[in-house]
Amino acid sequence: MAKNLSGARFGGIDAQTRIAELEAEVAKLRATVEQLHEENMALRAENEALRQGEGPKSTPTFVKPNTHKQKRDRPRKTRRQRSAEQSAQAVRRRETPTEIRRHALERCPDCGYPLRGESVARRRQVIDLPVLPAVQVVEHQVIKRWCPVCQAWHSPRLDLSEAVLGQRRIGHRVASLVSWLRTELRLPVASVQAMLAQVFKLHVSAGQISELAHAVAEAGQSTVSAIETAIRARAHVHMDETTWREDGDNGYVWAMSTTDGLRSYTFTFSRAGVVPEGLLRGFTGTLVTDFYGGYNHTPGRHQRCWVHLLRDLHELIKTHAAAHPELPAWIDAVIQTYRDAKALNERAPPPTLAERLTAADALVERVQVLGRRWAQAEHKAHPAHAMCKRLLRHDLELFEFVRQPGLAAHNNLAERSVRPLVIARKISGGTRSERGSHTRMALQTLFATWAAQGKSALAECQAVLARGPGPLPQP
Image (cartoon, rainbow, N blue to C red; front, top):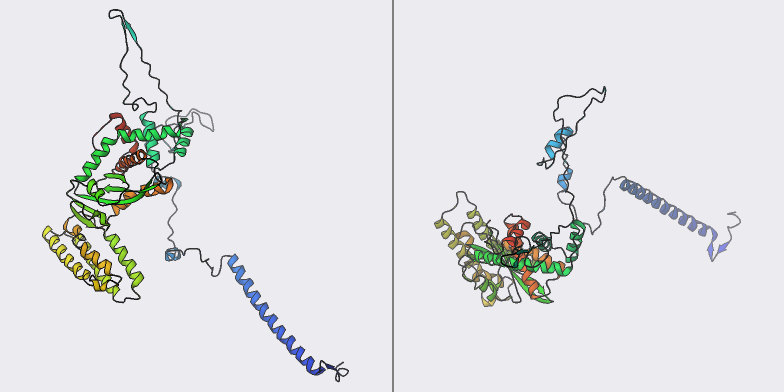
């Protein structure tokens, strides 16, 4: 064949040359096929290992990485297996039984002879809710009777103030439950209706639920006023504000909190400084706030929140440290003043009053030196210019917690106090009327105070409704 093609030509190329080119191309293709085959086999093996849970696993980019992997890598300690009785005694806390049901055999299951004597072999508690009856409807009938001497009918005067508010039909327990569900659990009106209907077979309208909340707020107004008065008499008050909407218009809720469990909430459309000044009129203690300028002229002493300041310092170094290499050392020096103040407060034995005052003055001087670094007008373009001016403006208010034992250096208490209303605003969008805002603030004041003092909100609310205007709840 090669002999026959020896003289042939293909496109001007000798046949032998063409055959050599094709053979070289075939060899190249065979090498490529072998390489692809090896890669295919390797991928198949890796895929099979992944299916069986072996080998490295690739995590998608949208999945957050796991934390504390070293805890899972450590071998777990094995412990001796306990018996069922031991496990039940160790894990299950025994409650005081409200009912005891005895289970005993009268005769021997093997021979039928009557059994004698007894002792408790084991106990098992089942915790459940009682079968709730339908709503209780009490009809009060006022009987009139005839007096033949006076020639007149007489009937007793009906006083139901311990059971119901005014001429309403809904009693104190239902009114307290509705207010608690709306305020503490932040349930919508429709959910409250469904709960009352399914659990108690009580059907009330949306208007009735709103009116019950208004009635409870009006009945507890004297207690709300007493709470506000007591807050102004405390030595330390934490204050914060958050946005709220009334009928689609923006406003603000001002929250006052104390460490002994008093909470007060007030809604206004203004965020000006006259609002906290009016709320704290007559206050002579120390006010703990953030750096909002509306608190600058409130009465009494001030302690500014170090958590807000540290957060701004970390943001400053995160944003501008690359362009300003002198910034990290300056920020570390500011933070060190707080660490030194905190170490003094936590020292054992506690520092004396004279030591506190001396240390506070020294810390203020250090902050003043740091604040003058870039506070001048020629450094207005420096990223720390505003922070330096803040340090100089509030230098005395940064270390009041050093001068006064028991005073917090942060405003976390007020931040946590406004959190429930922030969540409620996100759920409901606010209130629809001035009366609705007043009711919401009054109920939040009452229920937040009872919760902070560790009291039963339902029991306290029923007591307020039953006795009418009452004294301030004590912690």
